[in-house]
Amino acid sequence: MSATSVGIDIALGFVIGIVLGLLGGGGSILTVPALVYVVNLPPQSAVTASLVIVGANSIMGALIHRAQGTLNWRVALIFGGVGMVAAYFSAGLSKALSPTALMVAFALLMLIVGAFMLIRKTPEQGEQLSRGLPVVIAGGIGVGILTGFLGVGGGFLIVPALVMLVGLPIRQAVGTSLIVIAMNSLAGFLGHLNGLSMDVAVVGVFALAGIAGTFAGARLGQRVKPEQLRALFAVFVIGLALVLLADNVSKLLTI
Image: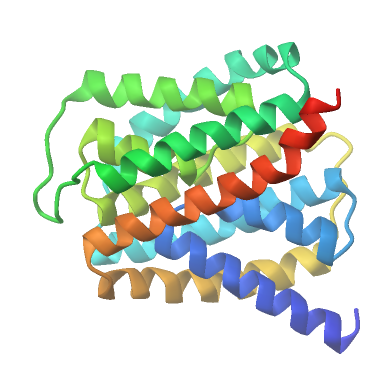
C-alpha cells in the first residue's frame, strides 16, 4: 500500500470509529461502502473485513463505556443473545424480496425509527425505566427478526429499541449496543470462515485507526447532552435513510 492509501485508510477508519463510539451504530453501514468504493475491495471481502473492524471497534467502545458506567451487561447479553437466535431463523425470509426492495424497506424503517427518536422523550442518564425481562427479550427478538430479514441492523435498530422499548437512557443504550454489535460481528465472522478472503493489512489499519476513533467518540459522547445525542443519532439515521432511498427507489421502479 502507498503512503497516500494508508493515510486515507487511517482517516476513514478513525471517522468510522468516532461514529461508532459516539452513536453506538453506523459501523457496518459506513465501513462496507468505504472498503468497496474507496479501498476497492470485492463486496464479499469487504463484508468479512467489516465484521472484524466493527467487532474490534465495538469491543473497545464497550470497555470505555463500562469504565464510564454507561453499559448494562445484563441487558446486552440477554438482548443480544435472543437477537442472534432470532436473526438466524429469520434470515431465510429475505429471499421473498429482491435486494433493492430490502434496501427500500430498510430505509423506510430507518425513517420511522429516526422520527420516533426525534419526537419521543427519552429518559435522562440516571432516570432508567425498568421495563422487566420480558420486554428485553421481546425487544431482542424483534430486532433480531428485522436484522435477519433485512440483512442489516446494528446500532440503527438496537439503540432505538433499547431507548424506546427497554427504557435505557441514551448514553447507556449506546454503550450497551456496542456489546450486542460485537456479539453479532463475531457470529457473522464465524459464518464467513469457510472460503475466508480478507486483506489483513487493510483490516489492521482500519481496526487500529477505528479503535482510536472509538475512544475519541466515546469520550465525546460524555460531553454531549443526552437530548442532543439522541437528536444527533436520529438525524444521522434519517440522513442515511434518505441516501438509501435515493439510490434504490428508482431501481425498484424500473424492475
